[in-house]
Image (cartoon, rainbow, N blue to C red; front, side):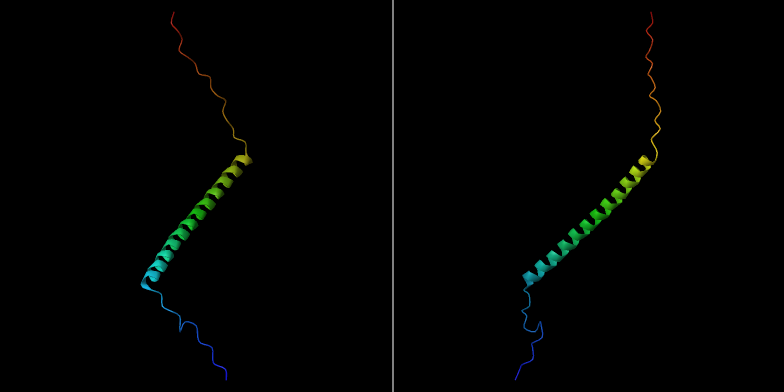
Length: 78
């Protein structure tokens, strides 16, 4: 006669209080790190889009610069 398989988790030992605290700390740290990484990626993408837009504007038309004005110095009195 074959026995039925034992369901998962029935004989699994419960984690100790220290392991539970470590798991909670690890989860919290990973959430913070993942949040910072996602924020950094959003900022990088936003800056990349701004840079590409600025380069497109610069490439579209040459910048019309005014000629540099000559500075006149004070005249010496004789």
